[in-house]
Amino acid sequence: MNWETDKMADDICARDVMRTDFLRVRIDQTLGDAMIALRGAQGEAGMPSALMVVDDDDQYRGMLTARLLIRLLAGGHEDGRELDDMMLLTVARDRLSTAIGDVLVEDIPVVGPADRLLTMIRRGAPMRLDFVPVVDAGRPVGFAPITAIFQAAAGMALKPEDEGIRFDR
Image 1: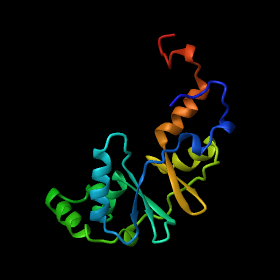
Image 2: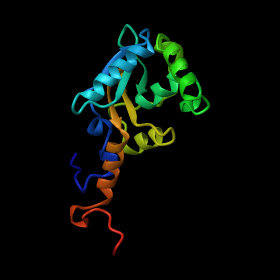
Image 3: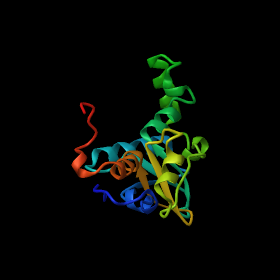
Image 4: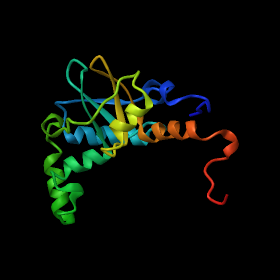
């Protein structure tokens, strides 16, 4: 992405940094279905590893990333650290048939397409999100990768002649 050096934070909004090439899964599908969809998305060039969770009316219900899916498959055992390998595999296998809606993390913050850069940072950074969902009138329209959000912020602070951040000056 190319950011204009004279663009101010108030000028950059979610629609400027969001990706619209996302996959959807329904809330009644299983964690196994989500795992297959995420694996397929990662295999496609340029496809991000996030899924928008929707209901039958295509209303946003949540988001799944690879990191969140691992946590859900571990059955509440934070990234499986409390379990040995065999036990973790058993728990994960047993949870593959769990409906996404039964375990979905629902407090992931969202932004609207017109929300500004600072709003995206304030909502995404505290939860250490990989992506901030972009929702318009209840429907998912994209997601803003946290890396794109911070690239936009850095682009406002650095000019092309700065040649990046240098520590030898």
